[in-house]
Length: 266
Image (cartoon, rainbow, N blue to C red):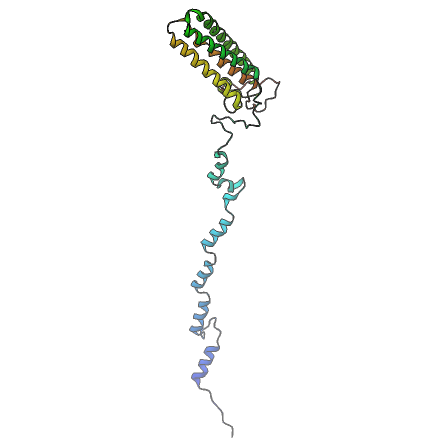
């Protein structure tokens, strides 16, 4: 005997309902549609967008920091101004503080140059000292010696000044000769020994002449204050002949210097 099983209409409807395409149609199960919608959940899309987090983008941008650009382009425009200005602001150990480069010891002239000028200055200072002391002690006798000595030294100083100026003008064609460096040689112009010797002799001449004039006021010993002109003139002469000055850009020794354009102030 064969028994026929007749499916329950309700169950058959449920099965057909579940086997319908989840993508649509009247038989689509709402739960299936919800699961399909979850696959495109905005929160899921948000998590995908988090993969490109702005912080991550910033880290990538830092890896190609525009301040690392060696030059040119937008990277150069965004470069750190402090980093660019650092080389220019770095203190130069050879700067003398007046905008001129100070010569290193190897670049300075030999300190034995100009020995003749130093010897003249030494012996002139000795003569002035002896004559001034003698005239201050016995003015009636030695005043006729100290005054001519002072006048001779003054005349010699004037000649040395003119000579130094002429030599300095000649050197200015190819070197940046300054008045301060010419008439008062500093660290970058003269070595230590001649520079200190010239300054010491000038100081002795000033002290001796002023002291003699004060010891015998209102006497011919006052002419002694003219004698330090020699010390200044010989200092300028040594600097003009043997001092070291910065070369002029583009100037060649022996060629005349091209005149500066009008209005440049040089």
